[in-house]
Length: 441
Ligand code: ADP
Ligand code: MG
Ligand code: MG
Ligand code: MG
Ligand code: MG
Image 1 (cartoon, helix red, strand yellow):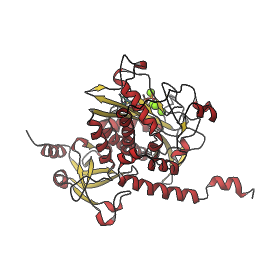
Image 2 (cartoon, rainbow, N blue to C red):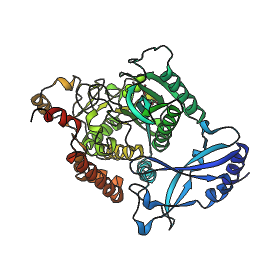
Image 3 (spheres, protein in one colour):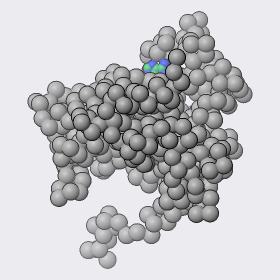
């Protein structure tokens, strides 16, 4: 039997790969990659490839910028849009410091550490995200907010460009090993959703990054822009990334208990209790842009209040009806601008605290919370999610557990990003202000 590295090198040769892309993710969730010619493959797979981390957002200071990318062999995948004679393949990489220790600012490492912590209690964290996005027209090389189609929820539109593009995205993802469960037209014009099968959170986070860049690449090849912005257009639905979560123990779904009320185990209820306790701090990583908070407003099936429910889509945590192996809780606040590694880390840490401290969630809220008055909400003990990025970052800083899970390096970097973004936003004069005041005053 051959060692895994030699087997992989053979595989790369058989696939006629000319270039390898070594992929990793910065703290903002942006995919980065270094392309190397295949002649460097052996070096990359044995000792890793060095790069300068100082120019990567949220990475390191100049004086300690030497980083090494080490490919995770299990993530090898051909890029379907670069096939043929000069094929390209990619690896998702782990980031190491020159000293050989994992780099604390690598979001993949942060999630791996949280998963290892849960593994001490025998748990594997599984996540299944539902990514929504818009397909917009381009104009002179720049994205616009012009719709490509005018379909609505689950519409069977006459075959149009958007539908073709959605199908091509699905075909490419399938070639890359995704198991696509469903795709449909979403509520808004030009808005789509593609669901792929859940997996352990690390693998899923890799998939989210791959999904977004594959969708963008394929849309662009057809002259469209795939936008994962949370709320590109005022007055219509934004794009979410509902995250379905479950824990597995000994290959069984630990959230399922056929004898419990609602068939939800104590573990599941405590996980919900933890999610709700830390919901405000999680928001900082689940909703990381200024624009994210324009989606978290009443009336568009996006959550704004800290609550859970068995069916109600205005709640932050919903428990979808399937049971057995599909028993899961759906965390509805994340949007697709999030760094999935960091968002999953925060969710897992919160849920695990819930389990370890047996946190009972408050009573489920089965009425439409958007229709409750502030007094009714207060009476029911329903708190409000942070209203903007600044407030969310304050909530993160006030939450020891989530700060510990992310680690000081990440918290510091996230704080400086949030403060700079907020300051730029706060001091900018926006079109809304000119519309409102210019003629009047
Ligand atoms: P919705 O009903 O909210 O629209 P979807 O059907 O669009 O939900 O998506 C459900 C997601 O939940 C899929 O990604 C699916 O793979 C995932 N899922 C199913 N079972 C589990 C589980 N046990 N743990 C985590 N995710 C799961
Ligand atoms: Mg869905
Ligand atoms: Mg569904
Ligand atoms: Mg949806
Ligand atoms: Mg959903």
